[in-house]
Image (cartoon, rainbow, N blue to C red):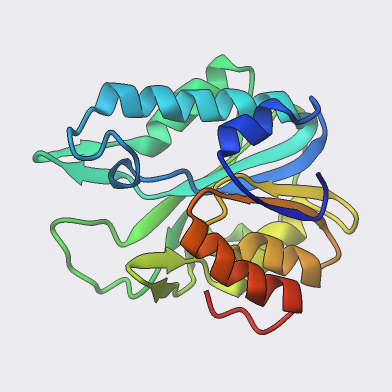
Amino acid sequence: MRNDYILGDSFEVMRDMEENSVDLLFTSLPDLSQTSFGESKDITSYQSLQKEALTQFSRITKDHGFIVTCQTDRKINGEILPNHITYYNAMEYLGYKLKDYKIIVRNSIELKNMYTFNFQHMNIFTKTGTIKRSGDWLRDILVYPAKKVEGQHIWNENFVKLVLSYLSKEGDYVVDPFAGHGIVPYICKQMNRDYLRVEIVPEIYNENFRLFDTGNEFIG
């Protein structure tokens, strides 16, 4: 399943993948509002989904590889839903180390909003992998303005290039099981990484497959 773009359920796809085959798993899991648990605000079931995803990530990723989760926490019912803490606890249970951690500012740091966060938590997990820290990777807070398409934020291309540069090398296998508009595999093609992209929403898949397959400029 290398260098492929799959329309389907990422959980089903990952269950069919070979164990210990992935060098870098780089993704943003679905927000609560993007799941069937959003309307009822069923946080317990949502966190079970998150933990199931992380279990699959662990199974398919090499011990010296990296699992990178990059997502905002959630403001809901006057409380904070701390997604990054859920990920840390689950990955520690699975035998992973939190190798690095960064704040990713998606737009202006001056933005004021009482309902949503302006930044994402980037957790970098591994069992035995090492990172050569230099250049922009030494920063704890990274400001990379995101592109917004139909209400969804798409990571800045330079941010994706930074992550791929430090956590993978040419020929490595990079997987984004919740690919959305597909910026990760798009940059993988530019940087000579093998990739797998999975997207469950047909409308997003069909439009971006055309752009992705023809090699046109990425527009989301």
